[in-house]
Image (cartoon, rainbow, N blue to C red; front, side):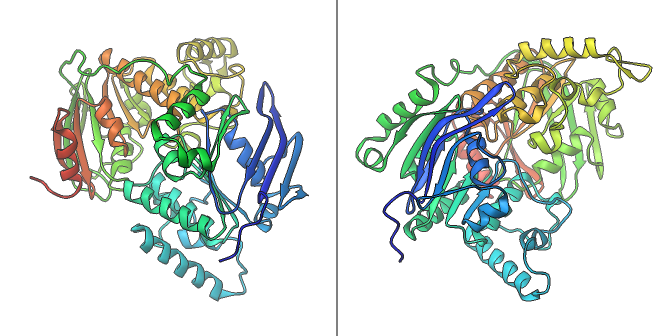
Length: 507
């Protein structure tokens, strides 16, 4: 085993990056050591993604210096980062959706060396076996769930053999077993003198996996907990210190979320609905009810959500909204009747990164009055509408003309919620609504979901986070292999019954 260098493998000094209206990083100093798992914590918008973007060669610092093994370097491109041994897996996927898994993994290999592609496939298969993941190398990436795509990106980074591996929210879509296995792999990589940087919003993961924890807030480094403190202090003390650093003592956002509001008749009824790759699905959701749909990612949740929203064609069965059949209607028609869908793919599907916030808030109503007349855009009504929703949903943006791609993940999620929960929503499907969000934005999003239910909106909550479902749902349906294997009331015994259903025990 190669001994780690005496000093940091990567050193950042005085790193500053400014965007219009935002200081993303403000004179950040950071040391990344070989042989350590370095956890980077902070709210959305704290500057973590910008910082790793600079390590990956996607963004250039305005001020400051980056050193690799003590030598100043300019990471001018992703290719340069790879040559320096830095591999990154980003929160928002960077795979080519029209290519297969194997083709994505082989990008950059020499086309005249056919053995290289075979070696990549064999390496990928070995990683899949080690993680207990079933993804075929010939599968088209666009057909995979978001969690499966993220797993492919993790494996691609590992196959490149980087000395530094940066994982941006890499655990957020994995099963608990997958998280544990990734944690074991990170520990083994660190043992072999590799540096691992893990960006996560989950304090438990930070304390479990981290050898060093750095906290960013408003673009600045506000705390660092080194190996000695993480080893010697108890977990509860460490947890309080990290929370205080992240939020400056202000906490994560509000009191307990109330369940069990006013309930009414069924708003959304699904009767024998057959979706791609699944069996007949039936359930009803009352006005004011939150129906959670639990299950390991990749068991048909994505297909069900998109079929309910009208993005996929139903292969059989019926969907009724307020008693009216909508199975044959397109997305726009369903939306006008009050059926809304909040996708888990915020940037790739839910928004257009280059469009301003104002147009993203109207993305599903382009051409409609009063925002367009005779096909001509009406800027003043569009901006007024945007300002109202920005204020109501606390979207942190310089203004309605800011490109939505410049916002943090939490604020992009607020834009989606503002668009889908306003304007006559009757039933809303949420797909992994807090995926990748920090503690404060997770609490805010969950509260918005319950407030909408309290106002009579029928809600379908699809999530791989069982704690989230148990916090919000009135009833819980469990999906496995494209079918609902059981629906249970969210009472004191719900967790054990859901676990049994997820494990295949239908009793």
